[in-house]
Amino acid sequence: MEFHDVLHGHIVIERSDIIDLIKKLLDTTELQRLRNMRQMNFDVPLIQELGRSRRLPHSIGVAYISLQLAQHSNLNLV
Image 1 (cartoon, one colour):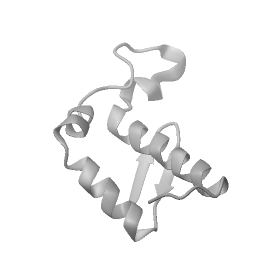
Image 2: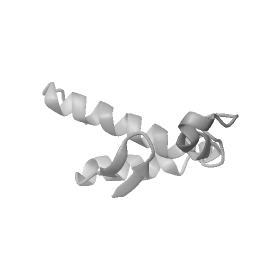
Image 3: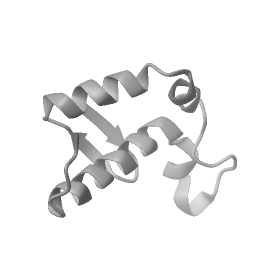
Image 4: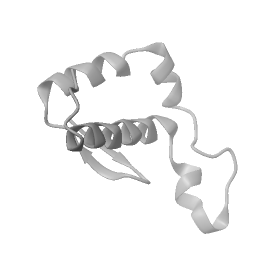
């Protein structure tokens, strides 16, 4: 499963159990609302990329970083 986020870059998730979990989460109404919400509600000339980015890919990027931290800390993920 692959995603792209302006802040986190290219994200690749390979574990099938995590992919299944993400698919279930993406089907929820709450996360679907994020698809159309911009990261920032105004344009800032110096960081225009943030003005165009959406909250859903950013949320996936944050979840990916959390997954990496959990793996690095040897936490039980599922």
